Image (cartoon, rainbow, N blue to C red; front, side):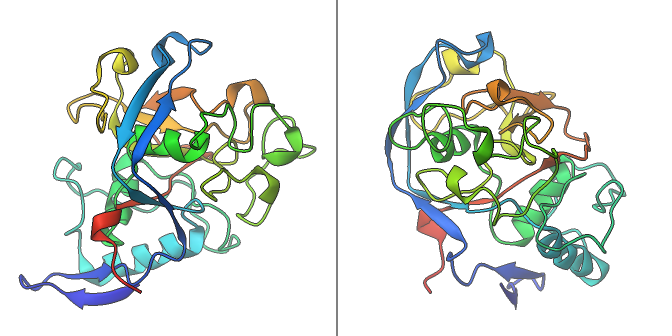
Length: 258
């Protein structure tokens, strides 16, 4: 990251390269499943423009830099509807934990503010699902069949948060790790139970006015059957849990050259 000053005097960070992100090229992909819960039906096709998505969940170390910035840089990157006086320190924040573990205990406003500070954004639900399922619509990031050795889940010997370097075999076709299990992940969208039946095929995205936000990917306490890539979850935007984190995305057209 590079810190710069915008014309209005607000200091913020710019993405200097996208080497820690995966490029997902524009096109059509499979979304939802007729074998899934009611809110993931029907199976359908959707189209997305090219975008980048973080290869890993945002880490404790990266989030600590954001918290340091807030001490002097203020809340210019925060969402307009963020509660007044909001503190972006995660619940039960422990800076001494390994920096390469995913940051958890963050709510949707925390995730939004971090992403904006980093000149990125939260992925839409459709972008998240495309990154997890690949171009062939697979059930899990690595393929069609569940494998307890490929993800941090309730079926692991010791269910726990793990670093991005664990479970390399579980990476998705796009090169992203821990899209199944480990930390659940906030998405940009407002949640609606009928979204897969009603949203447009081109760039589908849930309404900003929804009371809850979409959460995807499942966590380390979930069984493998709950970690299929079409499974949808949701929570109020102020929810903070010890298995709830996020990763960021970026429009390909906005990526800085490197």
